Structures are given as C-alpha cells and as structure tokens.
Amino acid sequence: MTGLFITLEGPEGAGKTTQLARLEARLRGTGRCVTVTREPGGTPLGMRVREVVLDPTLEMGPLSEFLLYSASRAQLVQDVLRPALERGDVVLCDRYFDSSLAYQGAGRGLPLALLRDLTREVTGGLTPDLTLLLDLDPAVGLARAAQRGQADRLEQADLAFHQRVRAGFLELAQAEAQRFAVLDAAQSADAVEAQLWAAVESKL
Ligand code: Z5A
Image (cartoon, rainbow, N blue to C red; front, side, top):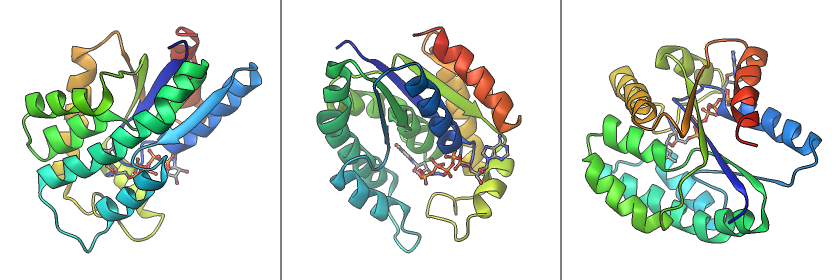
C-alpha cells in the first residue's frame, strides 16, 4: 500500500475533530488526495454501531463494548481504509484501535494482550504510520464537550475512568514513540495545529 495512514487520538473533547478539518485543508492545499473517516462510523454499519455504543440509555459490559467497536473497525478497514491506502491517499482517521486499548483496556480494565490479539485479527495488522495524540486533562475536555448538550454514554462515565483513559494513551505513546506524536491540546487551536503540522510534515 502506497498511502499514508494517520490517526488522531485523545481523550474526550481534546480537539480531534477541529484539528482533523484543519489538517485535511492543509493537505489538500498541497495537492494530495485525502480520505477522511472516523471511528465508530465511516461506514453505514459503523454509523449504526455508533448509535448503539453512545446510547446513554443502554447498559453493556466491557467485552460487548469492545466487540461492537471492533465490528465497526473491521468494516472500516475493509471498505474504506485499505482501498484508500491502496489508491495512495493520505488517510486521516478520527480514532482507531488505540482508542480501544485506552478506553476498553486502561479505562474498563480488559486485558491489553486480549485486545491486541483480537485487534490484529480485526484489522489484519493494519497499523497507522503516524498517530497524533492530543493530550488533555479530561476535566477540561469533558467541560468542552459538555457545552454541546446531553452527554453520551461514554461521556457519562466518571472522571476517574477518563483519567485512566488519558494515562492509558500516554503509556501507549511511550511504548511506541516512533509511531506517536504527543501534542499539548490545552493550547489554542492555532498552536495545536502548528505542532500537529510539524509532526505530519516529517512523515510526508
Ligand atoms: N471509543 C471507545 O471507547 N473505543 C473505541 O475503540 C473507539 C471509541 C474508536 C466516540 O465518541 C466515543 O467512543 C469516545 C471514545 C469511544 N468517547 N468518549 N468519551 P465521539 O466520536 O463523539 O467522541 P470524541 O472522539 O471524543 O469526539 P469529541 O467529543 O467531538 O471531541 P474532539 O473531536 O476531540 O474535540 P472537538 O469536537 O474538536 O472539540 C470539542 C470542543 O472543544 C468544541 O467546542 C471545540 O470548538 C472546542 N475546542 C477544540 N479545540 C480547542 C482548543 N484548542 N481550545 C479550546 N477549545 C477547543
């Protein structure tokens, strides 16, 4: 595959959606073909899964939660990610398997080894070339997200859960420093964009 696969990760409200739009515009400005997608979502199946996993009225166990995200991911890899990378696109994905390792692993307490084994099957080993981790205190991120209205099922989890998730992301980044760029998402959107572009340019 000749494309470049970039994922954006981080706790709730860290600014991934904001930065993804800016990055897409910059990349298109350089004349590159860009595919933008997200998890969960990005396919018709993924959109249905998204409604289920974010529904605040539903209760589900950690393994069910992980398997739902994985179902969405398997379809996204097959229908969107691999075809775009085979065409040679730069692919920008808002969350990918690192979110499962952080939320269902560090957050919910599922064993990382199990999640990694299943994820290898789900993705066929497709791993990002670059993962931009927007790191932010979850109290700040949740407050940003709260301005949007009713909290979804994940946003309703307590602060300690979101703190474990943040710590989980940072551990993943430390373990794979070659793949990750850790960005300080507490800065202004313009300052975050500048850090992010520097990390992307080094991979182009
Ligand atoms: N999840 C999981 O558990 N396991 C998995 O495997 C996967 C996901 C793939 C997806 O929900 C949920 O699923 C997510 C993880 C879980 N839940 N949580 N918690 P989502 O896609 O709806 O949630 P999200 O990915 O966290 O997106 P978000 O809440 O929209 O956050 P964001 O995209 O990072 O931030 P934003 O929308 O760009 O910005 C949020 C607000 O902050 C907005 O008003 C902006 O204008 C503002 N903002 C942005 N940047 C800044 C800066 N720099 N300063 C100040 N304000 C800013």
